[in-house]
Structures are given as structure tokens and as C-alpha cells.
Image 1 (cartoon, protein in one colour):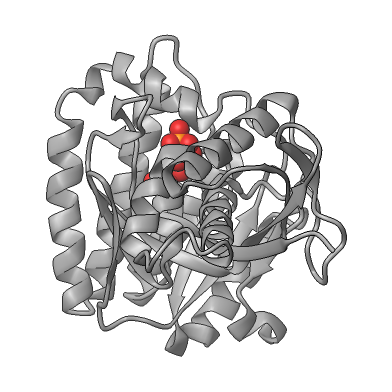
Image 2 (cartoon, rainbow, N blue to C red):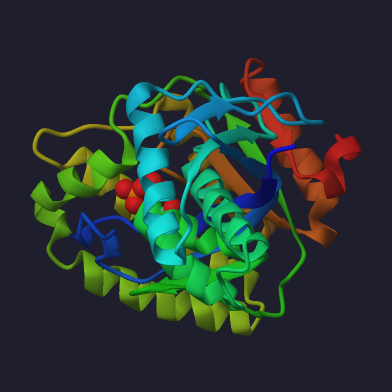
Length: 329
Ligand code: DP6
């Protein structure tokens, strides 16, 4: 029986975004970022020794709740080249079959690169441990390695809040540690512009000047708000930040956009909801059209109210709800 190891890692959603790099080859960010990990949206990676020559990628065979993604040739090469980087760093020799899959459908518009690259980094380390090649590696050290595969994956080594500055991310123990997450799915198509390409394109926007300063100041505000559990300030800062990132996309040369009319409408409804109730969700968007909402646990009744308004107005949207509230809608 061949040696097989496996690991899982969660996806994450940034409230202060990693957008723009100082090094594209090493995924060094122009600014520090901060994210919440999405424990219900995970990737699994299995690594199996093979006597064949060379590493290869395969979709994960059906494991409970996991779906195999359809990874393009380019995507497979990128994944394997990160595995080869990890093998070198950890002194692993031999050839392996690398299998990956996600517990969320690959057609649902959730970027899986953060979770899958983090799971691959953890799987390589599990292999190194199995072969007694590596001593203890901390999550922070693994985070630094994972960054090389895909920047945002360095925050997926942690549960809860993770802050990434320079080499890798660290866990942050703010008082708000139990949140619910709703993904409002508006578009499940593959993006025309990948986030790696977006990192390059935003530097052509006139608004990129000052971006590092804006993101750094916002991060300080956000951290203060999280320290004080000031939910309204978390909401305001997160709203400003994702709008800033999308404006960078929309003022790039040539311009491009991930937002559609529904993402704009839902953002407006959330803002109106806050004005009316002096309470509401934290809203953010990634490099895509879908809308992410974060809720405190005591907000179930207003979450029901807002989400039923959204589904009444846009009956075709799909909601992906974190497990804590899954059966409550
Ligand atoms: C918009 O981590 O996907 O999601 O390092 O080139 O793989 P690469 O980029 P990636 O960028 C993610 C950008 C973002 C914002 C964020 O997660 O911080």
C-alpha cells in the first residue's frame, strides 16, 4: 500500500484586502490584510507516493462532502509547481499524485485558491513528518511557505481572524470569535480576469497612488474596532475597503469590473438596512460579483429579515449559509 497523507484548510474572506504586490514572483503584498476564515468552505488535498516518474494532479476521488474541481492545465501546473517548491523546502524526494477537492461546489463562484494552496502546504508538511524529514513547523512558518503558492492562502492556515503582513500571517484573538457567514451567490461563472492578473492591472489605476496608505490606515481602524467589538465601525471600514478595491479595478487601464447591477443593489440595500435599524451585517466582496455578509450570533432575526428582502427582490440568487444558522432560513 502506497503512503498517502491528507490535509484540509478553510477558505477566507478579507475585510482589508490584499490587492497589489511588491513582488509578483514571491507574492509580496503592497499592504497588510486581515481576514475571517470560512470554516464551512474547505479544500482537501491528498498526496500519494507513486513509482511513476514526475508528480501529477488528479481530482480528489469522492470523499464525503467533497467535490473535485475541474482544474485547467495551467491551474494544475501552478498547483504542482507549488508542491515542488514545498518538496524542495522540506527535503522530500520521490514522485507523488496530488489530489484536490472542495466541500463547496466548484461552480459556485467561491475562489478555492486560498483553501487549496493552504491544504497543499499542510499536506506536504504531513508528508515530511511521515518521512521524519521535518521537525515541528509552526502554522506561521507554514503560512510563509503557503504565501508563495497563492498570497491569500497564507491566511488560511488559521481559524478565525488572520492578519498578513510581509512574510506570512498570524492569528488574531479579537473578542468577536464566533460569527456566521452568508454568501449571496450572484454569479458562478469563471472570472475573465484572475486575481493574479487583477494584482497587476490595479497598478495602472490613478487611484493606486495612495492605496497602501489608505489600506494601512483602514487596517488600524478595523483592528481598533475589532478590539472594542465596535460592529458598526467594522461594517463601515469593510464597506469603504471593498469599494476602494473595486474602484481600483474599474479605473484600471484598461478598466474591468466584477460588480454587476445586483451586487450594487444588494450593497445599497445593506446600507439602507443599517440606516433604518442602526444594525446589520458586515458586507464585503472579493474579486467577483458575489456578496459576503458576516453576522454576529445575536443577529439571527435581522439576518432573516434582510435575507428574505434580498430573495424577494432577486428570487434567482442562491444563499450559502454557514452551519450555525443553516436550518434557520
Ligand atoms: C481579491 O491570493 O488569489 O481575494 O497571490 O496571485 O494567488 P495570488 O492572488 P490571490 O488574491 C486574492 C485577492 C482578493 C483579496 C484578498 O483575499 O485579500
